[in-house]
Length: 282
Image (cartoon, rainbow, N blue to C red; front, side, top):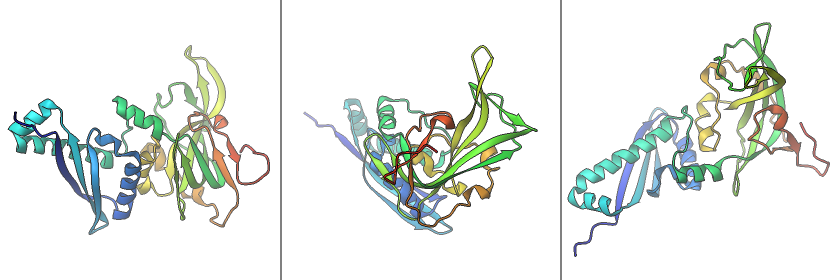
């Protein structure tokens, strides 16, 4: 009886990627920690990054696919066509992951939802924690919030930036610890009033709208760390550099933010964790 192939080895690559080789390697290391979930059921056997001129880079991956009966039959009958088809599909997946960073990722399969469950950040550890309050002239879409109404003060919106160095991201069973120089990280909130289903208005809160890093060009890293909430360009482009003016002097104080699922600043309390004194919300 003829034996059909049970696996298929596929090599894919992308070059002239608009990022440095160092940044690309960090992305791949983060993916490797998660098991490259977006390729499943394909498994990544090996990967390599290369430096290209003009600050660009190249990524090569070797993968293996387990084939079901009809897939094995297709590979046996038309091996070149089937291999090219799978290579094209996997290359498309890789391209989307690397270059479609502004599109919110919505898992649509059980394995993807399972991966998201385990790899969604649950808490953060900060150092040099601080905040900045600003007013900005900004027009938001009427449906920017489904259950809140942004408040205006003399035509401007009130923003609250929680800023500091990101030391650790805690997941359900794992954590990602950063080494010096730690990334400068911020959470952004806007002052809103709750809007009920009957269109009546409720309490006033600072509603969370997204995360950002000091350099906008580095923010493609946020989805790879599990942060799905990033700022739209209409807001990000208005954020002043002054929010990053905090010291880089050594500090013994660490702060933990335990409720990243909270939607308002008032419910995303930060506690001091680096001393023996009682926890203090901030």
